[in-house]
Image 1 (cartoon, helix red, strand yellow):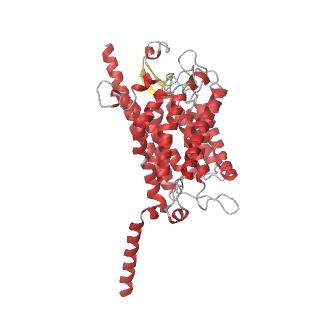
Image 2 (cartoon, one colour; image 1 turned 60 degrees about the horizontal axis):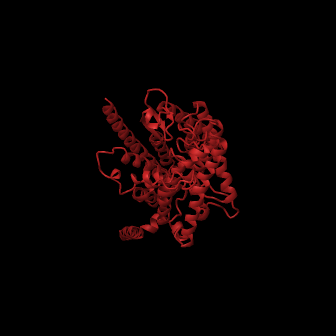
Image 3 (tube, one colour; image 1 turned 90 degrees about the vertical axis):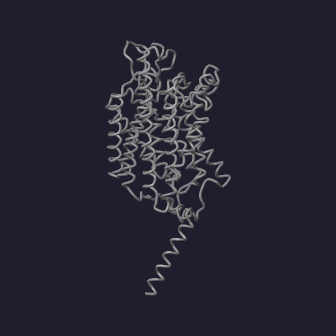
Amino acid sequence: MGSNIDAITTIFTEFYYWLTVALMFLIHVGFCMYEVGASRRRNHMHTLLKNSMLIPLVTITFFFFGWWIYWAFPNGPFIYQGQGLILDMAAGNAPTSETMGTNLSDRITGVFWAAFLLFSWTAASIVSGSVIERINSGAFWILAVMIGSGAWIIDAAWGWHYDGWMVKMLGYHDAYASGVIHGIAGGFALGVLVVLGPRLGKFSSSGKARDILPHNPWLVCIGLFLIYTGFWGFYVACNVPLIAPDGIGGEITGETWTATTIYLTPTTLGAITVNFLMSLSGGMLMGYFVSKGNAFWTYSGGLAGIITASAGNDLYHPIQAMVIGAVGTYLAYKLHYWVENKFKIDDAVGAVAVHGYAGFIGLVICGFVLWGHPSSPYAGYAAINPLGQLVGAIIMFGVLGFLPGWIGALVLHKFGLLRIPKEVELMGLDFATDREEAAAAEEVRDALKQIAVSK
């Protein structure tokens, strides 16, 4: 009986993570639609290809070294109890390991790797939207690999791994990735934008910001709804679907097997479903209110609400999730325009605000609301607390987010690789890329004019 239960559990877990991957793919579809809708017509194909090509680049690099990092670096290294790389745990997740290839003895590693890979795509896509219409594609792809297969997986090892030093020492809690994915991606995007500079025409000669409106609000709307849909997969992929009490040292009391968070603390899909919808609703209502009915910020507000509440949505009451989502959306909206006007930062789709500021705020709020709750089922770990969450937010947004983005962009800028030339930006990236096709089209138009004149 025991072996049969184990087999059913394994097959169920395999299918569970496989399904989350399919759902999370919709996040990337949504980001592509969202970015194309927000960009101007002369930049459509460049915007689409820039974001789409991160899929193969991040996938391959994540296979070769990104996944290994998650298992090798939970101690920093050398931050917790003087321990360094956990090579024994990482060995089974190296690209040369048998578990990373086709086999029947391990059904979980491949789908678990894929779920984390889709998180990597999300982190890189968040950066992609903020820099549209002016970044060199090659430069963006380098930055996408930096965050997708480097920076974000390091912060996951530190603050999401059940053995991560931030969980142990700080009591860091981020069940659905307010900071681990969104905070770091928003910080990384801000670092890149500081070096990249605004789009031509974004600021007047007096320094006043101009609104560059989405060319197709319908695409933006549908893209955001697809991101909402994909977030269901995102949320459930942050859980372990079924685990026995002895699987985590007997810390779960009773005989009932249960779902757990990424930290192996008990949770239910029912609880996070209610909290997801309440935080989405609180964010949308606040987005509509604070923007005075602006459709772009109403839909973005729903996303900001989810992200703000995500850190503690495994433990919040639904009313708390709604209020926290609304508060995070309000503050992210205000911060977006303050930073834009004060520092002349041109974030084309509000990604830094919706993901970065909301994620940072969500971590800090979580420290107060869940103060004293266990961060882990294991004995000896620090409890959730305001200081630990604040330090964690600074590490996620600033140390692992902003600094790598700023340094990477600065190096690319020094070599003249970061930004497209001014004349190309004015002409449009699609036209500049497809000069031969554009020239052929012009010849056809000239020929048609000559025929009309001859008649």
